[in-house]
Image 1 (tube, rainbow over the protein chains, first blue to last red):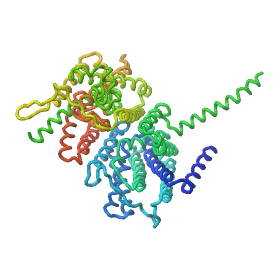
Image 2: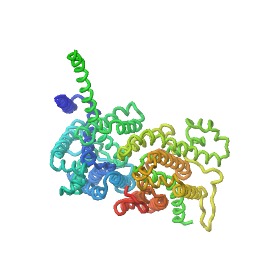
Image 3: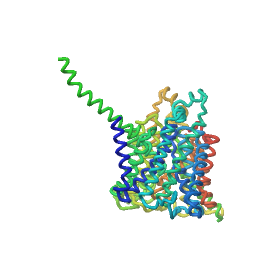
Image 4: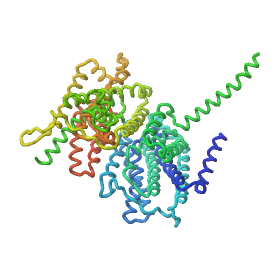
Length: 325
Length: 305
């Protein structure tokens, strides 16, 4: 346990001193890691705690970014644009939930996939509004309380704050009765119904919570890139964030964060050396599902526990032999 | 010729092509209960392989064409040979994927979906690596060139041929499924896998067979489709959602459903593109959503997915 605390403290320290020791490029990579970590934490609410695998969350991510970008491009200020985007996130999440929660399992996956594709099609083809493949560029970043976020370190600081908020709300959610009842609907939906819980309502609320943080991540992404394009809404984008959740370990708090760090760092740093990034991504995907289905964080923890137990056993074994003699 | 009629002709040809693609997808989905997200990649890979067997495209693989001696054959024969070779190659690839990967995840539908998704990334990138990014068009073999005037409408022959091939495949599939012992076993597996297993059918062996058949059909469709669409990166993610819509509209595991669904989707796509291109995708997916919400088992299906 103390080892885990040590690891987290070291990471937190690294995160805190990063703006003073790293170049702008690496600070930006760190911001992206945090943004995708928020996105993955949001999706994890459904995948990990509700047992509902969505393959269309990039749609929510994208709608948030497009709403903000479109309003800013239309001449609105950043504050009303961001507020309107938050409203849009909730509305889109509710629409997703209303349509997709009629099913679970593969049916749920396909309905979310279909909605995601519809939204992608609109972003790509509805050129009058979305600019099609050219996307919409956002000339400035918001300046909350007069603090400019245009430099990489200041934007990183802002992202850290939002990330901490997301983690706080997630850990609160996991410990709350609501989190417990959501896990109940995942494992024993019929029993939960028999106990008098409204399974549909619990799932609906979970979807809104999940969609909210996914949308917030999209909003941050729009400020970070200062540009939105249909690429944000593709099936590949939905698959990538699902990979982060599953690679790190769904149903844990640390898993999605580790998964996001792994994928974003590999994508940004390794793609400078590896041309065939998608090939690597696909191989990781297949390998994790085949060999470490519980994800890297629980999987490594299991391996470490096994290795420790094995080491203990070996250490004791000669002593036991000695006492017999 | 007015535009609506031209669109209708194109839609019919596209419907035939979609049936070739979706019938295999539907059988796999119906039997194994997984939407095989690699199916679009099988289609694209089939198209690329067919083109390479015919000696077109980048030089890297035209060796294959020389080695197989296809170059010396009459062009018509070479085309059909290429289509069959692509189908055979994809059947082997599909069978291997089922045996080596999906088999180990038996019963875990979600894990199987994720593996097929990962495989589709791998295949897409391998295709990009091998055949580069440029679209590769394929011209029809001599007997399928030209056009046929029927009344005052002129039909391009290769588009008519696509429909005929689709009908031929549909009849062949129907005969196999409806008239043979193997077909009866597959139908039993689709309807009630547990009972089928209990009554002595080796359902897991059927999985491999049907998966290979589906992949082979997708590969065959890829070569036929190369006449209508040009083979290029992204073709896999263009075709996969279409197959998905067809199967959800028609009902999983239902051959008549796949047939009707293919033409519905083809008409929606072609007319949607022509009428309001900005909402074409919306018009395609809306019927699918409605079916999922109102009749989850599809128009002709018996099981909800």
